[in-house]
Image 1 (cartoon, rainbow, N blue to C red):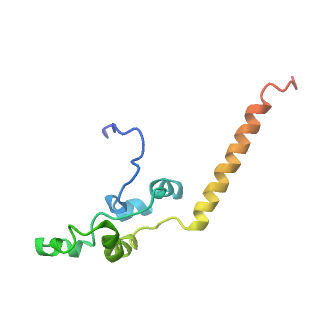
Image 2 (tube, helix red, strand yellow):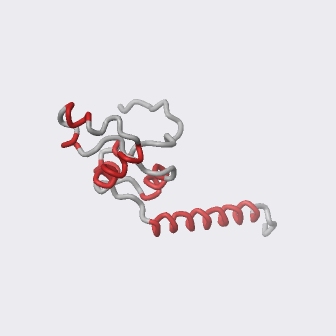
Image 3 (cartoon, rainbow, N blue to C red):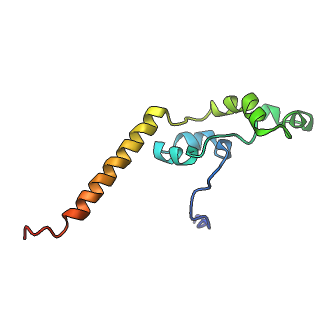
Length: 113
């Protein structure tokens, strides 16, 4: 049996490469959107740049902006990030759901009994 997680909410800032790319790419658009809402970044460069300590020395103390400029796009290319159109559709769907919910709540007990 899987162990229950002690986490009760999504972490606010998770490197995208914390997830295996196959797992990430199978998440729903909504789930991916929740994780990237605070931006995307990677923790490690591609695996071939992590094989030896000498290779790690080149990037391990690099400032985040420089690291992302040099390695971020290469790693993120393995992950399907939600497109701006997909994010906009999610936002519109959420707005429609809110309106529907408000109508359902205000329509209760309206007397056609």
